[in-house]
Amino acid sequence: MRMDPRKQNILLAIITDYIATAEPVGSRTIARKYRLGISPATIRNEMADLEEMGYIEQPHTSAGRIPSERGYRYYVDYLMKRQELTPEEEELVRQSYHQKVRDVGEVIQRTGQLLSQLTQYAAVVLPPKAAASCFKHIQLVQMGAEQAMLVAIMDSGAVHHRIIDIPSGITAADLEAISAVLNAKLQGRPMESIRLTLIKEIYFELSKQRRILELVMELLHDTLVRGSENRVYLTGLLNILNQPEFRHVEKVKTLLSILEQEDLLGNLLASDVGKEGVTVRIGREISCQQMSECSMVVATYSFKGRPLGTLGVLGPTRMDYAKVVTVVECLTKNLSQALERILG
Image (tube, rainbow, N blue to C red):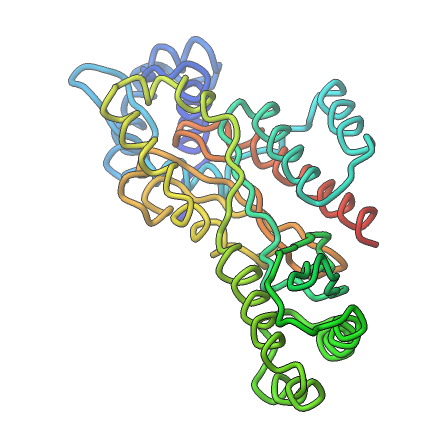
């Protein structure tokens, strides 16, 4: 629902001031600081209308107003103006991504740290889901008479390895033959796409090594699917706990208990994988009652056009959305480019 320009300007002034001060905003403050060309009495009348429309709230009798969730949503959708990074921030981003990185995990952790540093809120990053990554190379290496190492390299850059027990009599040549068949059948395929027909083909070609093959397939599934579900990198937790909204002990306890639930955070982030642009969830839009005083700004990063994971910022509903959206856009682009360099 659109509103007339005067109400828009007053709502924008309230949100801008409240984000900066965390204090309810009164009509005199708006008249003095924002020079809208109207009297405090007129501003009060417009504020009463905005409150009736559900865009602002009055937390205490005779106090100023604060934005409601609906007010923040209107601001993000219609009023927010893009806030550019400062030259110093742009240089920090450039240096961070041009430093030599060894693997995907390192660049993802660095991205989380940058998100937190630039926004002063908590940063959350969902790394590439192993089950959605494609096999690049699989190798069985003999480690002893009855042991071998299973190594699976994914196109996302992730490397998984496990020591397994093998039947006596299995030679290095046997392991090489098994590796060759697995690479021929699985290379370029994600684990989640492997169907019964393909598994039957593998078993047919390696019928003499059925015992070790069953173990290998089970380990690949456990390692890549079960063991990697919704792992989340969370950094900058102190930033959000330092916000005025979370100075109450009970609120802090509730928030911490939620942030400890990695599966919950992972599910929240995973629901946005593949979405275009930046998604802003405000308060109850997060679909978690205990996070009703928080907002999340999330975007998908990719490799060669294929969505890999999401990154985002978690903060109070009184978040500096204009700054956060810009930072999330910037780092999503830089992370995707960094993955192209590492994996390309």
